Amino acid sequence: MAKIPHEAMHRIFRDDPGLFTRTLRRVLAADFPEIEEVSVIDTDLTTTEAIERRADTVLKAKTAAGNVLLVIEPQTDKKESKVRSWAYYLSFLENKYEIPAALMVLAPKAGTARWARGPLTLGPPDRPSMRVFPYVCGPDNMPFITEPEQAAEDVVFTVLALLSHRLNPDVEKALRPLADALDRLEPATASYWFEFTEGGLGEGCTQDTWRNIMKTMNYGYVSETRREAHAEARAEALTEAILAFLDDREVPVSDADRERVLNCSDLDLLRNWVMKAPYVADSAELY
Image (cartoon, rainbow, N blue to C red; front, side, top):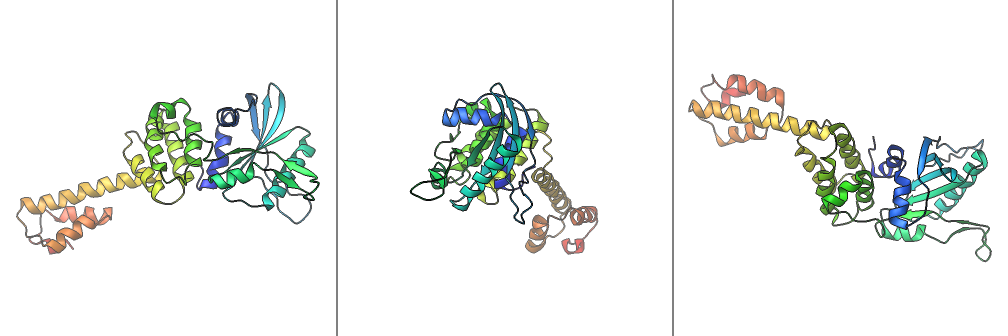
């Protein structure tokens, strides 16, 4: 399961390899063949040299046009040294497997996406010895999906599109349409993509909003966020029971004691208080 935005942006293609073709066709109008079968390739491209080289995701795909290697690389900021890395990945893989290798770069910033589209060259400026031509998807060409029906047409692509726009100030407009689309899926699949999206959004206000949306879902979502929501609901029920016992018995409850009960989230402590509430003569005796 993806835990951070960078990881989510490339691992999504391992979960749905056909997403590579669908993305190229929808975003870049590229005539890439349908993927019939796929296997994950070891991403460690280190040789005997003491320099570690590791691509993010590498897939070996079988298509009607023949086998092809798919290298998927998220890239947040412009970094000239990545051009050398990408060129190395492609040449190493083609040399090892003797089949074509294609590179997709996923950039959450429009400026990074423009840079990655090139020209990316290696060698002397007046006569480059190598050029790298990646497929590039970023917030400037990925659709910003805010309609539930459009989101439901291809849920996995909608997840990718949302994560591509995670730095967009208006990204929260795309959260509910995706949630509604996921809610149409069977629970296990929906749970997976809810949690995947949570990790892919990264920490911050957008992730908090997504978590709040997850808490409203009506099926057995079992992520940490869902468990937190269940714990909050149990704490609220225990709190109401404690205060109801005291109020019904006309037990004096100071403002400070009432606030202490309302702000408590320790379930064991609340259970202890709810057992005492029918018998105490003063709210202070709870503690």
